[in-house]
Image (cartoon, rainbow, N blue to C red):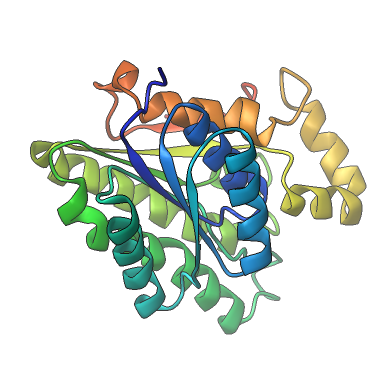
Length: 251
């Protein structure tokens, strides 16, 4: 018996990286998982792997910047599985670069795919989550960096997600919905790109992690999310939890 038997989850950005790792871990605990993202072929790979392991999943192509796509993702999940108890907002376009270099378009895309998409999807899922629901949003420790040069726009949109998460935790707990945010370091394709393109910075970054390693998308991030969605974490609400090997101090 899994800790999430009978539950249905919707995970955005689940075609690869952290979202995929979370989808795998939720399915391993018995949840039926709707995996959404922009690239259908990547979603089908995630679904096939979950099925290979004995789980049940559904691929839902979705651009989180499109309100109609978000509504369709929730509707398709509920229609296929009969309900929705877990929402994981993972998908995000990242606006990186010095403040003088970040374009309005890049920052707007980061906002639309980050806090705005997160809030939209939370509101769409809210009626289905009432009574026994869990929301896990993804943010970042970027705003806590010793040197934020090049990360200001990215940190800004991620801090917006943290604020929305805390507000939902306070407003929706009475409706039986727990809302938390994780701030992970994980061996995702995005991180691999960063390591390749900024090797010196990446080496310094990893050396600053007390455990001296980057987390695994499924084993370190996904399994924690599965626990956070289970009854074992029934009293955890409104928290920002860094999954980073001890690097950041979250106050």
